[in-house]
Length: 289
Image (tube, rainbow, N blue to C red):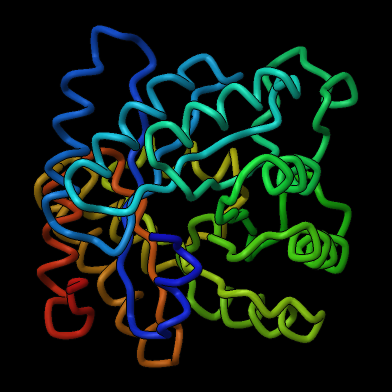
């Protein structure tokens, strides 16, 4: 099923993200974790793409496994070092596996790389190419707190309009920890004429080092209450996981209460986190029929 059709129903949805292994020796354990998450029957699952496309085959294999478990997969695809020929080959592979949803991203720039040398320099160029080469539902990414490389919030929002015009059917946000940030962002997006669904990305952060990496990569604002949570239980992993899941659940309940129906969880390949959040929301977000 195409994700645009799932989101069109405008009922609360819950989706999960998993990432493929960096090396082949980890594939079986990652596939098993993805299958456990698929067994929870989310509305869809996204599968990320390796740096510089190094594990692109793993992305297709994990996405195909998710599909075999009866869950709609969303395969990531990036511009990083991607030629048109290689991208066409990847699209053909996705088609052959029955995968019809793609999240098209510019991707993180590898050290020493220059995006000016890439055949696809921006996500909207990749989106346009995908739409020309198959009947795919294409999604994109957005940053409630502005992309770190964008010169301004206004420029960032306008880039989303360009994605929409290129055939993007929905957007998924980078993780955020303060819902007021998301509400302000959504107002600006709608004011700019971006009308496609925006899926809210939520991540339960279960260790302080992970949070430090998130801040470095995305510049996400961390509310004082989350800092207190990390400080209080940083030496107690079990308690910290429970607190992080509770915080994420509270965020999601507030979002849905305020009309934001589509929630995406960055699971970090942890089935127990996905399962607990789903359990906490069992009467708020119904599993798909």
